[in-house]
Length: 121
Image (cartoon, rainbow, N blue to C red; front, side, top):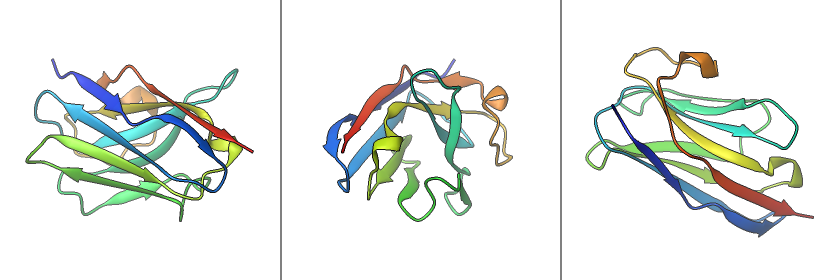
């Protein structure tokens, strides 16, 4: 069983930046970030493969968010720039032992507890 722990959320003004980190207790392959705004379903934000070479982003965050990982530390990072009020959500780290690049939350085996990101206008 892999445990995921997120950190780095907080309150920021529109146009600002935040850096989210997710520490895994063991080896994982594909890792991703999802987010869930109040009253909405959890949605895909970004995904990265085991080697870190392949990344994919939701259209809503493309060009503003960057996902990266450090396998020596079993961590994945989401750098969020040019934040908008509509980015306000609880952000979740997810991981799977599979190798495919996946956008569906149903494909992930492990989840963190979530970290709140609030962007004020």
